[in-house]
Image (cartoon, rainbow, N blue to C red):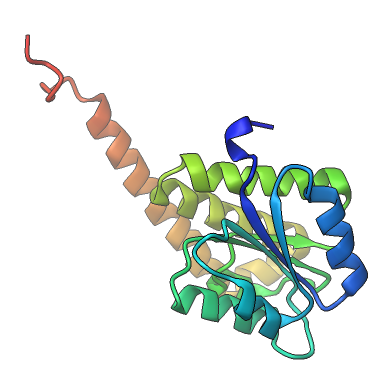
Amino acid sequence: MSESLEGATILVVDDEDDLVDLYELQLESEYNIRTAYGGEEALEKIDSEVDLVLLDRRMPDLSGDEVLKRIRVEEYDCLVVMLTAVEPDFDLVDMGCDEYVIKPVSEPELRSTVEEMLTRAKYYDEELRERLMLASKRAVLKSEKSPSEREQSEEYAELERRLEEVHQRVDAALSHADDDSPSAFDNR
């Protein structure tokens, strides 16, 4: 792991106490861990210091979907991983999460997901993060939904359209960067 990612603050949210405690145990040697045993507690514990939220989707007091909406409305600058046993459906397309991981999750998978998310947050610009988020959602839906289900889904078509739009914006930005035109650095 990159030393620059150590010390990031992660909020672990799940109504299953044992899972929260397990994830905390697996991550606490490298990160600052906050724990919440439900959605309401998560909203009490999140602040501008949180870099990443590991969020269960189905909780009795306040669902992960609702917690995620409030995180986005409040504009906390953090990434959110839905870490859940809920099989994804096409509502994933409009969900504001950055990654969707289906339980059970092994320790290596958990660590890899956390490191990837923190790397995105630290080193990637917003455009690239959006591209990765959309590509991740497409990959999850491709693995969980049949080709005919995807073909019939308006949400999936919208996801493909948005992903293509982001690809075009990134490609356009890269082509401008590759131009042989003089730049601010060519003052010779």
